[in-house]
Length: 480
Image 1 (spheres, rainbow, N blue to C red):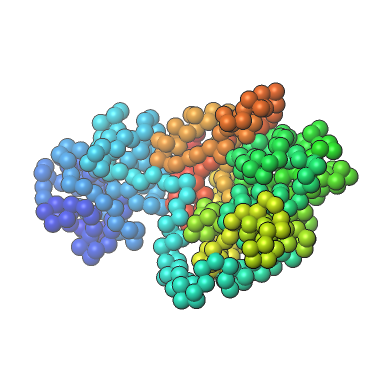
Image 2: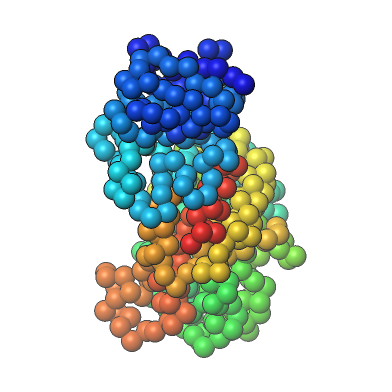
């Protein structure tokens, strides 16, 4: 049985043993009993130094405990401990969310307890990967600076070659963002005499923005209620001779059936564009996403599965003609320096530093995607019958988002808030109901899209999530 000293006079902020080992969670009543893992002992009122017996040491990191308020319950909250799982977890109750006071304590209004603040579990946390790769990133930054190349230099050229090899396409061309990638891809393949672009309305508005910016008219098709994706069946009723392209989004990381979409588009001469922003690394029996259509758009926004240190994107294609068009369009329409040969060009370049970072991260992408799938699969197995976690099974899904479907989203959000778990909606407003354009689409009704917009909720998923954090989300989903 371990003996440890709680020395209020020396260090109010850490509960540690004499050997410096942090203790397992416990609940203290400053005015009386100390409850530990084994036998209780007594802590005298207003004691500055007390000996606590029966507390098992653990190797977890320290948890801050502010100066003890008199007659208050204190809870030391540490990860991956049986003391903090399930109902009655210190700092959080099932009856009511704990509120945070200005002095850093959580107050439970039902039980009138004061407990230390438990950090919210974020939806995503880029700082974890950045911290682990800090030295490598600093080296890359130094190498790029020393090279003298800041735009379209050797790192950029090498990344384009490596990305094309990863995707199995002949060409990959870096651009400034995923939205630019969509716009330039559409400009490259949509004939001027067929100015309609068909897409889904549940993907955040990115294709709508890109297509309208390029001067095209957007038409919407509904989505499959199970996959949330465009399918050949949902497209069939909206295709005609005015349609120049269909944009298929691999939403949430799940690969759409691009082959089936091409089957219904090809007889009408309609081009197919993949939006791979959320699904880089997904593989289908027909090949990797990004290689399945006439052209593909990719995003390297920092929260994507393969993210840069800022904005970035790429266009991938097997067509040399389309690749030439993208090269011209991304740099003012130039065919030669200062010679504008193609209308509609813009300044959209992936800078040298982002290319270097993406080169370094690309070899890790498959492992990151596997971890994401593992997390979502764990959630799905633990979810209660009141909700469904969209599955992320097999290489055709890279689990960009962990999406829950429920008929009572507001209640689920409140439940997750009570467990201090962040959530978000991807996406709450269908494109055809966005205020800027809703009047144009007043007669458009997409029943599946509109229903799902009120039922989807995203919960935390990123490769650096710890096991105890995954368990924390599982507990919340299971107890809803």
